[in-house]
Amino acid sequence: MKDTIPVGIDALAFSGPAAYVDLADLATARGVDPAKFTKGLGQHRMAIASPCEDTVTMAVEAGARAIEAFGIDPAEIGTLIVGTETGVDHSKPVAVYVHDLLGLNERCRTFETKHACYGAMAGLTSSMDWIASGRARGRKALVIASDIANYGLGTPGEPTQGAGAVAMVVSEQPRLLEIQPASIGDYTRQVMDFWRPLYSKYALADGQYSIQCYLDALASAREDAVGARPDLLGGLQACLYHVPFVKMAFKAHQRELEMELGQAISKDEAEPWQRLQDSYARRCAPWLTLNAEIGNIYTGSLFLSLIDLLRKAGGQLAGERISLFSYGSGCGATYCLATIAAQAGEWQGRIDPAAELEARRRLSIEEYENMVRAGEQADRQQNLAPADFGLSGGLYYTGTRDDRRHYERI
Ligand code: CAA
Image 1 (cartoon, rainbow, N blue to C red):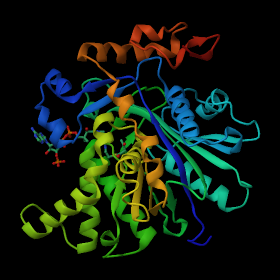
Image 2 (cartoon, rainbow, N blue to C red):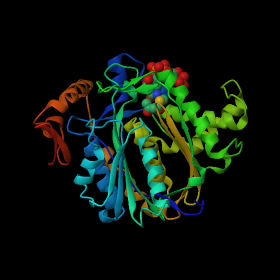
Image 3 (cartoon, rainbow, N blue to C red):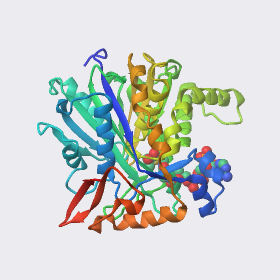
Image 4 (cartoon, protein in one colour):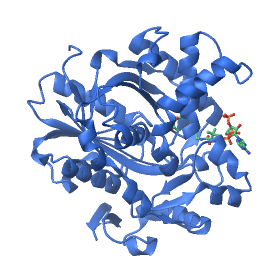
């Protein structure tokens, strides 16, 4: 496929839980200096899903918003892919619930992708291939990233939790982002940095090792994408990364600059350190606000950063080149280059989730811990009442009756 055929993201939307925990509150409760979470990790709040909000409900809300805000006819969707590591069934895909609840056409290919935080990028590139092959016949793909990051109370991973879904419509002539297929580089290696056994609702992580695996994957996927380019960053207006916590984006950007300079960068050397600070301040930091407010949403977190960029600067950066890096533990990664679409500025107001975030409820640590414990039992509850968790209108999971999950719009 030639680089000139525009395929990419035509519509975007976020949806997440109605409640959050402030990380200063969490630090106090855990006897930790709040600066470790806010400065050391770069996180301020984390979204907390109640037992009535799951991967399906968040995916449906995000999908409905993307379709509605961008005036897309649901009958045009010929592929639906949901990327998640927080499936609700060992066999039945989240995607088929979402297909039903969104009222999509039955003549649609529908499946779920799982590879930790990489599932949505796998779905995005697969749907681009589907379009480029001619099989789409002018139709569009809906790719939804939906996850709930759960490490468990009092664990090192606890401050890096979060929850949310990002929906993307992928098409020819995209209105938001054109992705250059020839610039896509991939990487896979079997590592035990983060995983979740079938018996556990909580992820297990070898935290410091996972950071090294992420950085090694970035270096290899970037080389596969663009080779040993010492001058790539200079031509990019933004570098977006998978964001398990905001500081990780800084570490990632440092690794990229080190690759270009051919030397390690440390605080002790003023010139390269300042160069790193300047590059990060311009190409990364402005697009990490939503990640700092919502937390790790696993496979959607890269695309949350993209929403942040487009809502703030879609028009200003129209026609400019950016990079995207997706990392999924275990591990798999993709690095690619993309161009902000010429008309992105016209749509930037439609994708801003600020009002939803403003309306969220701040949980006390006691409420949060009770919510987590209730969540452990949610799959065995028959009649969950959304109001018990402070929820009013919306689509909710209301329990499993006769071994079947039930969803109701309240
Ligand atoms: N003030 C300011 N900064 C402080 C501080 C203070 N009082 N105390 C500590 N810090 C800094 C530390 O120096 C450190 O910063 P640097 O990395 O820049 O040195 C930072 O705060 C974190 O401190 P620690 O490294 O000591 O933190 P930790 O070991 O307790 O936990 C973690 C950090 C490993 C990320 C842990 O939260 C974790 O396991 N998270 C889950 C795994 C994860 O997110 N991995 C990321 C890569 S894998 C991936 O990306 C896939 C995915 O989504 C999971």
